[in-house]
Image (cartoon, rainbow over all chains, first blue to last red):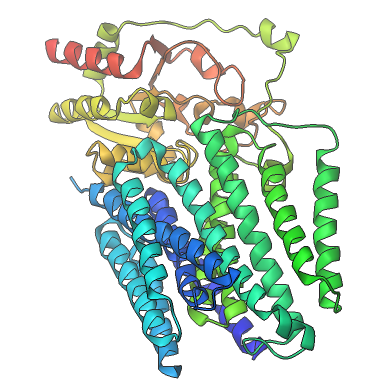
Length: 89
Length: 468
């Protein structure tokens, strides 16, 4: 099991390098803010962490939900705002 | 439960396709929407597939976070994008570390009995938890230092003290020792857990403060990469493919951008992190002997040179954005084009405060993206260029980078503006650029200086052009 998941990770890095090296310099800022939003995927873990057990884990989970949502909502919105500005002649 | 894994894969596919569409400005916006749909699917899947969730807490968290994120995203000035990305990197890192921490706290009892957790052996579990907390926390504190430097809360000068590297080495060594101790079955997990959080937070600070303001584009890119690594490590903790794949994508993206930024400055990553470049150097006697004489022209005289030109290349630097002159430059460019002249923009990789920053600033001023050319594309164009107009850029057009081995910017790829027939340079004063060195270009025979604030100068230039 450990090795399967490591395989997924390594292959994903290769996919990442492959697609991201094709992003032109003009779009590097939106790429950063967009990938920022994607790293907000930690929200999935954060939601699971708020499991009801009244312990410290629940509260850490809540803070994580807030941080990750800032990332997801803020990241996708600001990326859209920027990409809207890129116009042709 | 198993079905949920399919939806995480679907989310990951949408992220990949979304990033793929970022390869062209035409499709990029759709790509971003696609990625956000992927995120929506991942969130809904989690809400539906997990048991025993506290929905009140989750909704409260999402509303608070959504409001903060939404306000940031709509209010932020484009010049402040680097600060925003820096903070968001920090939040992403913190979220990953918190999730790993929460899972670890819940499993402490199990850990001591040696059973498998989330399908992982206790050793592997501990290593990925510590990795996630380490990288996530370091990203959090490091990002806030980067934010402080960009915003001017903290001096942009490198902050160095004697023995800095020794401290960093001791911190790193302590981390490794604690990890090894815990993996080998050490006790007192909770206290060591706090020690790891503390050490990681400290390292985020000590690794970022010695880096100068001019190197922040590299640091933000690197922290961007770290936030991805932290998410991936958390994915290992929870055995969630969605997190692992997304984290890997972000990690790779940040790493590529870091590499591009380093190349743009001809610096190695180690040199950026440990070099403390940008400290004000005392001018040596040599420099004063090489005092250069410049020709200073009025905008009226400059207008006549533009009038005679067929091909104009504009070289914007960050000074242009500081002067809020993007719209003024577009107006000048549009006027020149209406007279049948060809106008292009040359964008150096480190022209702004983060990768691609200058392009966004110019796009905001409605300058079409086809006219924005990167270093490799534009350099051959200078050969038959009549006028290169340098606005608030300095080090990126300094020919010393090509030949002067003693120059701190030697070897840095530069824009070959000096190959144009005429170079018109607008600066407020003769002050030096980030690297703190005088630019020999200003004294060249084909160089002309037009002093003044970029916006005022361009507006005056436009007036003079229209009066010709």
